[in-house]
Amino acid sequence: MRPCPWVGCRHHLAIDVGLTSPGSIRVAWPNRELGDWAETCSLDVADRGPHTLAVVARIWGITRERVRQLEVRALAYLARAHRRESR
Image 1 (cartoon, rainbow, N blue to C red):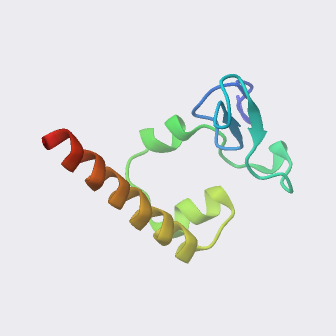
Image 2 (tube, helix red, strand yellow):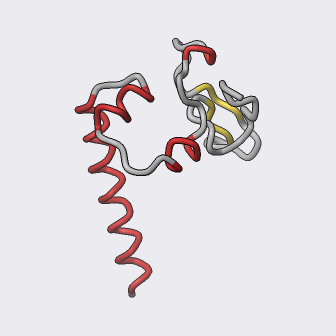
């Protein structure tokens, strides 16, 4: 059923749950209606396997370049976390 009815789920693409404080809910993209989202569950997207920058950009409604920037940032974060755990 789409859009995903579980808006309180941490895997929801349009809603951020608990980022600022436990139980808080924030609309990630306030200028987009929930019904406009082709995908609303990150788990559904991940189940389909790897995606190109263009596909991720379409899902999120942002540019391919912004997706690339976020990917670089996320990979750097994971590398730092891995180095901390390895110590």
